[in-house]
Image (cartoon, rainbow, N blue to C red; front, top):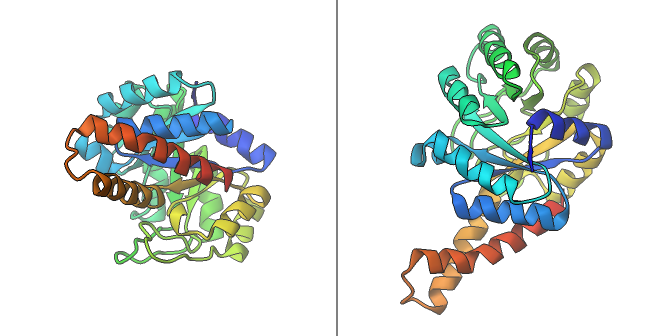
Length: 272
């Protein structure tokens, strides 16, 4: 069932739960993630990030996501993740995505507000929701984070009209071997002066207990999770090929992996 990002996250905000924004790389993981969400009876956000888009054109991704979404009975958001290009957001909206993230986090506050507002106007005219980012979420072994300033977050939320706001409170993209506690005091300061769903990128690096706690008790309504599932995929792939090193057919290999992906994803969804 196709759903908009705004509708899904507003329900999450009202009823105090968090939705998984799962980073997709292709057909097999999209289908597995949707099957897992249906089995658990929860909504899910299928996300096409920059790496995915470099491999597969936006219209193809939209068609695949639509097919997957229509095959299950739970709400499925078709979401463009981390776009820094307004024209790319326009193309995603035209292709049928129901959510887009314009990432202006490397821009000045004023420029971020101006460009994000342009995407919001364009998207809302088409009935599509928008996620923006204020502060900067860094990368493990890469760029350092810049924490979100609560006053800037309030100004950004009000002036852009975004449907969801990604914040930087200790979270880091692409963590593979460590966990980082979120700054709950900074989160509280942001919550006190904003009233929209908040998003945590780099959800794989957040301790599972804190992830679950804040999903129930805070305005965090969406955790982006990619690395955690990619690690599980790599582990399972190696196991499958170790058992039968002569196996070579891609469809056979991925078919055998899909049930494992569904199982891993169901466990993840239960933990939010």
